Amino acid sequence: MVVTLDADFHALLALSQASKPSVVRIRLEGLRAEEFCRIVRNVIQQCLADLAQGAVLSVQENRIRVRRLPVA
Image 1 (cartoon, rainbow, N blue to C red):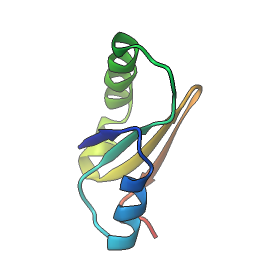
Image 2: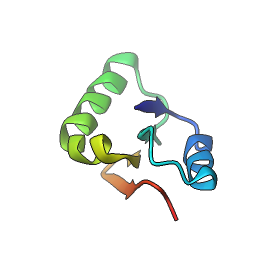
Image 3: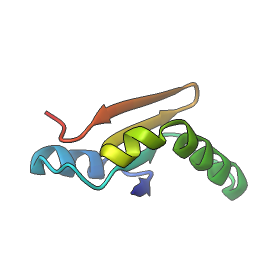
Image 4: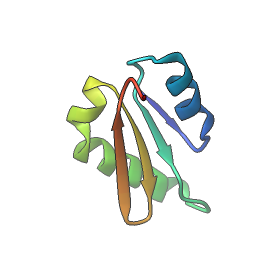
C-alpha cells in the first residue's frame, strides 16, 4: 500500500491497468504529522477490505472515495 499526497499514483495505476498496490491519496493540506497519522490509521481501519483487494482511495475532509483496481 502507498500513502501519498500526489495524484500521479492514481494516474499511473489507471494507465497500467495494475491491480496492486493499493494507493491512499490524502487530499488535505496543512496537516500536522499527528493529524496526518490519525487520518491514515482511520482510513485503513475503515477501508481494510478494499485495500486488501486492490483499490485507490481519495481522502477528503468529509469523504473517502474508493475505486477498485484495475481502474477503467
